[in-house]
Length: 295
Ligand code: NAD
Image (cartoon, rainbow, N blue to C red; front, side, top):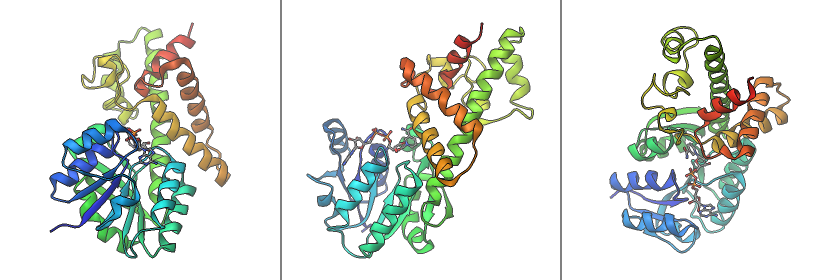
């Protein structure tokens, strides 16, 4: 019999991740504040609980998948009051490094093992069980957690000690935010120069301009049929979520005294785009903002 898993935060990501644990044979006890999330979870074979603390009954591992650092800190503070010593606590949310380290300290204070294990792969990867986990924490915690992470994902990368998973996630997404803005500027410049989208794609996707923003999530319709540009920028990865991650990168840059001028500029772009009401569109729709700023 596999270990029982407590899963808190059954939203767009957490819901399908918990379902994959059920499919892998783990008994899962879940909790979420939202009625819609609870309903979907109940239909998927997850045992629903009345509170976060109640999910811990009989559970050897607890996973949180919540929006931001203050949600995770608040839930973990509640959990450590009642958790059994030796429980493995894993947070898969994308949060700031400081909050992640405070969570590890809370767990250690309760005699528990802990991991920060944010993901990439989006909701499609969560449903398909193909996420990549970027993990921070001690090796013994990871060796216990690895089979559970592998039931929800395809790759598990140990990035270092407490907070290293969040650090990797924030740095990766800062690269993505900057490269997408650059790719959008290049396509708009190409339009102004009379270059077809397909010609620029054919060159850049096989030359030194190659990156995920162009070869997988191409911001113009046509060259990559599965990219959000072909479905009116339905996400994909929403601009509001990209803005959240860019802000995390800038908080981290400020707190460490790092100059990330391009990161700061890209954050401003996503912020303006969000303020104009486009936060629900895929982040590649920022190309429309670049066009709107060009004469
Ligand atoms: P979501 O808003 O769909 O889900 C979050 C869930 O947490 C909601 O159902 C909400 O009701 C629940 N919640 C909030 N506070 C709670 C509490 N105190 N107790 C119990 N439940 C609570 O968000 P999501 O898209 O699932 O994202 C979750 C995390 O994963 C975020 O940190 C996000 O940045 C990250 N992430 C998202 C994606 C994506 O494509 N959606 C990709 C990678 C990482």
